[in-house]
Image (cartoon, rainbow, N blue to C red; front, side):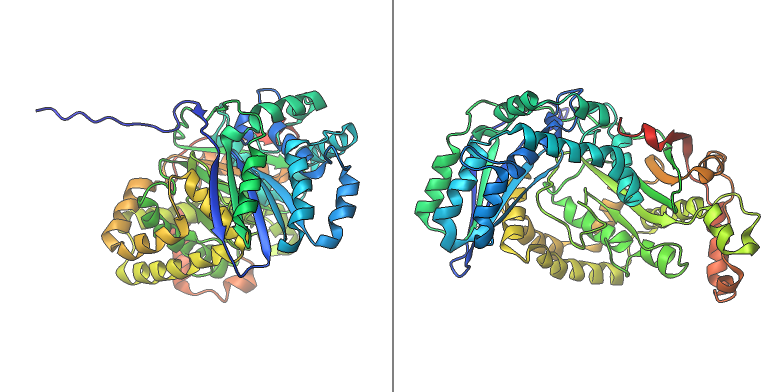
Length: 513
C-alpha cells in the first residue's frame, strides 16, 4: 500500500481572523492592573505604497487624544495616577499595553476606553507623529545604530517581495502617501474585535473583566484578512548586501536564512539548546562570543538567534509582543573594524586593504559548521540545558511580561510557553539536540547584510566575491600576547571558503525608500 503524506502549511494563504479571545492572569496580591490589547494585524497589513501605515495608526491612537480629552489633557489628568501606556507594532501584531494602580480603575478605564473606541485622530497629533516616524525612517535608523540598521536591512533583503519585507516603521515613499483619512480608514478596517485578544493581569474583579470585554465588543465586527507571506525562498548560496555609509565607524554584520520552525513546534526546545551554546544573546559562555570577542578582542559581542529578537541592543532578555508565524535563523556580529580604522590606530597595518569583516564572517560560519558536523558533547549539552531551564524564568519578572508571554503562547497554539518549555527541555537527550542541529542549521545558503564605511565597501566586496584569504589583522602589541594555538586557528579561518554567490553594494541613502 502506498503511503500518502499531506503537508498543511498554516501560513500559505491569507489568514481569516476569529472572535475575540481573552487571556487572564489573576494576581490577588498585586496592587497593579495590566491590560494588553493584541490586534492580529501588524505591518503585514500595510497596503502596498503605504508602508508604515499600521505603525502610524497605532501610534496616533496611543499618543493622541480621545473624544473627551486632547493628548495634552490626558497626560495632565493621568499624571497623579502614575499610570502608563504604550503601543508596539511588529510584523503580525499590534499590542496596546496599559498599566495602572488598582485604586484608579474607575478613573483610568474611561480614558483607556476612549483611546481605543473613540480616538480623536487630531490633525495636529497626526502631523507630529508622522513627522517623527519619517525622521526615524529617513535619518535615525541610518545614523544612530549601525547594528539595528544591519538587522533592518537583512529583513528587507531576506523577505523581499513579501508582506514581511518593509520595516515596521515603513518606507520613505510609503509614509509620504499616508494622510489622516488613510489612518482613520485603516483603524476601522484592521482594529476590530474579530482580530483582538484581550489580556488582563493583576488584582482585578470579575465585574471589571466583564466591563473590559463588553467595552471592546463595541469595536467593529468586520472580518480581517491578514496577508501573510505565501513562501520565503531559501537564499541561493551566500548572498551579500553591503550598505555603504559615509563615516561608519565599523562593519555591522547581520546574516540569516528562513527557518521552518517556531515556538509552536516541540523541536524548538532542542534548537534553543544548540543556539544557546552557539551564540546566546549577551552571554559570554557562547562559542561565537568566546572566539570572536573574548579571544580576539574584535568587537563588543557576537550572537545567534532562532527567532526575531526585539531591539537586542537595548534588551538583555527576549521581549513578548513580537510573535511571528514566519521565522528565520540569524547571526549578529556587532561592528568590527574597517581597514581605515585599523590603519589610523596601528601604523604597522598600513598595507591592509580590508578590515575584520571577512575574517569575522568566516569564523562565525566555520564555528556553526563545526557544530553541525560534530554536534554538541554531553557536558556542554547538560550545562546548557540546565542553564536554559533557569534562565527562561527571568523572561517573566513582571506581571506585564508574564501576561505578554501568555498571549504570545496563544498565538503559537500553546497554553503557557514558558511553563511548557521546562519539561520539554528536561526531557531532551543529546541525540535530540544533535538531530535538530543537522535538520535546521546550515551555512551554505544565507543572506548577509553589512553596514560599513564608504572606504570599505569595494575592498570588502572584492574580498568576499573572490573568496580571498582574509588574514586576521592584529596590532603588533596584541599579537605578541596571543598563544600559538590561536594564531594557527587564525590561519585556518583565513583560508576557510564560504559559498558566496553574489555581492552587491547599496548606498545608504537608497535604503528603505
